[in-house]
Amino acid sequence: MHELSLCEDLMDQVMTIAKAHHAKKVVCITVRIGPLSGIEPLLLESAFLISRADTLAEDAEFITENLPICVLCHDCDIESEATVNNLVCGNCDSYNTSLVSGDELILARVELENAD
Image (cartoon, rainbow, N blue to C red; front, side):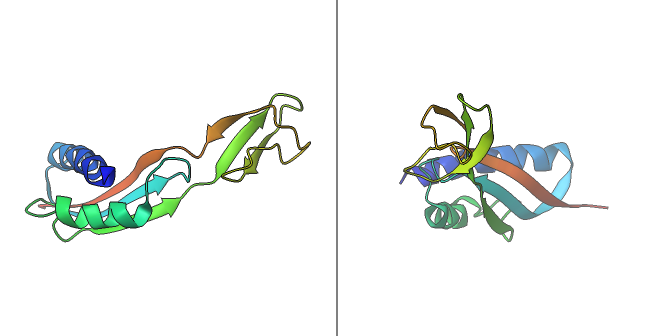
């Protein structure tokens, strides 16, 4: 389960942000996941429950948002949404496309509670 190691790296980033802002606790963490990232959102959520133990994020809510797959067509120069097994231009049906988004894992938001 590579989601656990990804979540541990994610928690390192969250803790760095929390310490930089002198937070007493992390309230909520939001991540955005593309369908081509190779990450299973439910497994990432389970890994979060393990990774948050004994941290400032111990009681934090974990939100995952799904991102669309977007491609850029090299024939008509239009960016459009595509599906997992069909990276075809939504405008002209060309297969001459390149991936713009859909393979990412983004730490989108960290909500903190400060000491004061």
